[in-house]
Amino acid sequence: MESVEKRFLRYVSYETTSDEMSETCPSTANQKVLAAAIVEEMKSMGIADAHMDENGYVYGTVPGDESLPTIGLIAHMDTAPDASGANIKARIVEFNGGDILLNEEKGIYLRERDYASLSHNKGKHLIVTDGTTLLGADDKAGVAEILTAAEILLREGGKHATLKIGFTPDEEIGRGADRFDVKGFGADYAYTADGGTVGEIEYENFNAASACVTFHGLNIHPGSAKDKMVNSQYIAMEYQSLLPAAQKPEYTDGHEGFIHLTDMQGEVENSRLRYIIRDHDMAKFQEKKRLMAAIADFLNDKYGAGTVEIQLRDSYFNMREKIEPCMEIVERAKNAMRQAGMDPREVPVRGGTDGARLSFEGLPCPNLCTGGENYHGRFEYIPVEDMHQCVRMLVNILRMV
Image 1 (cartoon, one colour):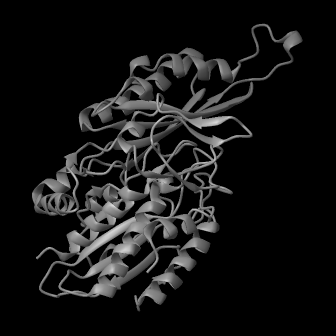
Image 2 (cartoon, rainbow, N blue to C red):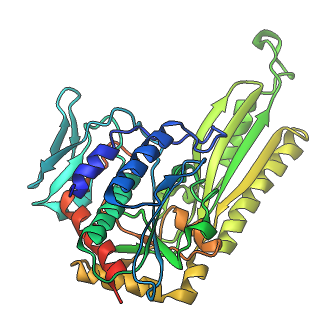
Image 3 (cartoon, rainbow, N blue to C red):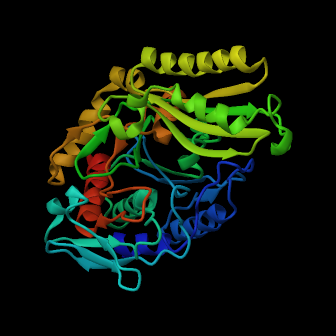
C-alpha cells in the first residue's frame, strides 16, 4: 500500500493551475491529465466505477453497509494561480526548530519568525518547496488523504459506510461546484477535505462576490491635451481611494470581511480593476456591493455617464444556514477527529470551498482539515505526520456506526 506522502508527492508533480480567464471546463487542460491518472489509480485499487466525466470531474464508490448513511468525500485537483504551480520541487525535511533553507542558490528560507505555525511542528517531517513555487497541498493533500483512506477501507474491510468520492477541477477560481453532479453523486451528506491546520472543522464561510470595474477615458497627444485628455488610470485610482481603507484583507481577521483588489490593468483610454468581496454577515456583504456600485455612480456623475462600468457577480454564500439543521454531521467529524488524536476546533473559513456551493445545492458539506499551512504561496508546507492523522480521521468518519 502506498503511503499518503508518496501519493501526494506524485500528484504535485502535475501542473494543474486553474485560469480564471479561460472559458473552458476545466479551465486548463493539465487538470484532465491528473484526473485521468487518478482514475487509473482508483481502478487499480479496486474502485470499479471510477471515471472522469467530460468536464474533468472524477467520481468513484467504495461500497459499504447499506444500513449506514452514504458519505461523500470531496477534494479539488487544481492549484491556485496566486503562485506558480509548474515544476514543483518538493522534498521532505526533518524539522527541529529554526529556519529551513529552501533554496541555497537563491538564498530562500522558510523562517520560524515569519510563520508561527512552524513552532507547533518541531520534531515532524515537513514537505516543503524550493521557495519558487507553491506546493499544492491545497488541495492535492485532500486528494491523497481521501484515496489513502479509501484504500485502507478496501484492504481491511469491516463495517463502514458507503464512500462516494468526488474530485473537482477549478475550485480555486470559484467554479469547482459548477458542474458537480450532486444527484448522480448519491451521498446523503459529504465533507470537503480542503482545510488547513490539524483539528480544524469549518462550516461557516464568507459570502463571496467578484467585481470588475472598467474605466473609460480619452487619449489626446500630451502636447495638446489641456482640457481634453481624460486619463482612465487616474479615475481608477480615484475609485480605489474612495473604498474603505480598513476593509482591506491585511486589516481584517476572523469574521471580518474585506474588499480586495486582486489585479489591475490600465492605459489612458481604458483601465480595469478586479476585486473580490467577502463577508460572513449577509447584510454587511450586501452593503459592500452597494458601496462599490454607489462609488461608480458618483464618478459617472462627476466625469460623465458611461465613464465607469461595474459588473458584480455573486460566487457563493455562507453555508452555515444549510449546516445548522444537520449539526450531527459536524459532531460525527469531531468524534472522528478525537479518535485520531486531534483537538477539534470550529473555525470560520476566510475563503470558500466547493462545500459552500454544494450545501446550497442540497448536499450538506462541512470542510475538514488536511494539515497544510501557508496555502497559495511559496512557503506552503505540510507535515507528513499530520497527513497520516487526517487519513485516520477520514477512516474513522466512515467506520462510525
